[in-house]
Each structure stands twice: as C-alpha cells, then as structure tokens.
Length: 232
Image (cartoon, rainbow, N blue to C red):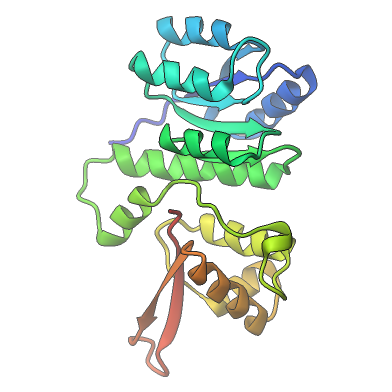
C-alpha cells in the first residue's frame, strides 16, 4: 500500500527570490511539504544527516560547494532522497554528473510553473510505482527504468519545423499520462493542435528516443498508432 503522507521536501537555493518562488510553487502541490530551506550546502548536509527527507530541490551554484557535489556527498552517506536540480548551469559536465547521481529532473532557470509541475508529477509517478506491492506490467517497468532526464535536441539544434514551445507542450501532455498510450487524436485534442502537427512532433520525439509507440488492432476499424512517454 502506498503511503499518502506528505512528501518531505528540502529546498537548497542561495538566491532568496528564487527560493521564495520554489516554495510558492511547492505550496500549490498538496502532496509536498517544504520542511526546510537552506542557502548553503553544508547546512543542508547537516540537516539531512539527522532528518528524513524524500525530495530535494537543489541548486548547482551554492556559495560553499557545488550542488552536484552536495548530492554526491549525500549519496555517500546513504541518503537516497530524490533530487530535482534547479539551476542556471546548463553545461554538459554538471548535467552528466547529475544524471549519474539519479536526479529526477533538471530545470534551467528561468522555468515556468508548468515545467516545474511536470517535474514533480514525474517524481510522484515514479514514487508511486516503486512503493506499491503489485507486480509491474512491462509498460510500467519500461517507465520506471526510463524515468531519467533525457538529452534531446533543443534551441537552434531542433529539426526544421519543430518549435521548442510546441515540443514542450507535447512532452508535457505525454508526461501527464504516465504509463498510458495515447493516439495523436487524443494529444491533438488535449493541447488544441491539428492531428497532422501532433503526429509530426510525436515522430520527432520517437527519433529522440523519448517516446515509444504501438499499433492497436482492436479499434474495430483501421489499426491505430498509440504513443507513450518513456524518458531515457
């Protein structure tokens, strides 16, 4: 049985304004409770050593240590709290190290509330699957194994005709249905775009190894192509 207690969340952010925004975002999510806020890594390290923590919102650039190094030290001390990195650092070295330490997501400042909510929902879905007693289906196993941040082409590296904002809308739609297969019609209706456009973005995400598809032959008519989010 999955515990429904509040998820104990620690914010580690030296910018007071950003920390305040993160705390404000957290308060809109009933499952999470901000139990502590720190501006230095050493203070967070000391707190986590003596208190149970489920999730950390962790900045990379802290005044006393690298946030990824803080996460490394926490892992060495046996702390298995999940982490969402929230930072202005988008270089490959930080990103790669964070991935190796099992971060749930990696948000680049400035980010929208919608993107923040998407990261938390991913964490909640993964947590629920890992805590239940029932056997997994293959689709659920695929989701758990692949629930890591993927490196996909963005910005100027996007394929011609693929817009970053629209791409993120399609990603968010799929992420909000973890373990579910959706048709291009379903996605087009949910985010209010044409079916042709939805299929173009879905095919792009398949090429990026962010989405898988299957053919449903049980529709009563023509077979239907269905898509699901499976982060690498």
